Amino acid sequence: FDTAQLRALFSQFGHVTRADMSVDRATGQPKGFGFVSFASVEEADRAIAYLHGQDVAGRVMRIEKTKEDGGAPPRGGGAPMGMGGPWAGQHAQ
Image (cartoon, rainbow, N blue to C red; front, side):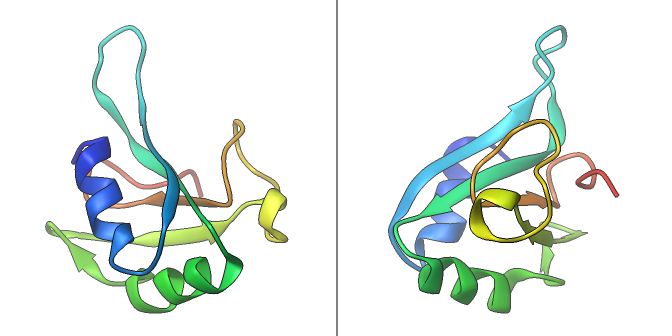
């Protein structure tokens, strides 16, 4: 899963203003989570409602709002949503 695929997946729920996959700087391999921001909270909520817990590419999506969006504090920075899923691992528990 790359940043373009992440953006495409989430764009079906609204205007994505940011989509980034976290990558290990030393190896260039995906860390297993990414960050997505939407133009509105309603769009983000719609994406969460539909995608959280869904199987995407053989992995279960786990989506959390970050502190910036009124959810849990971000782990290592981030945007309104952090998610783990099909791209090599899960978001930190």
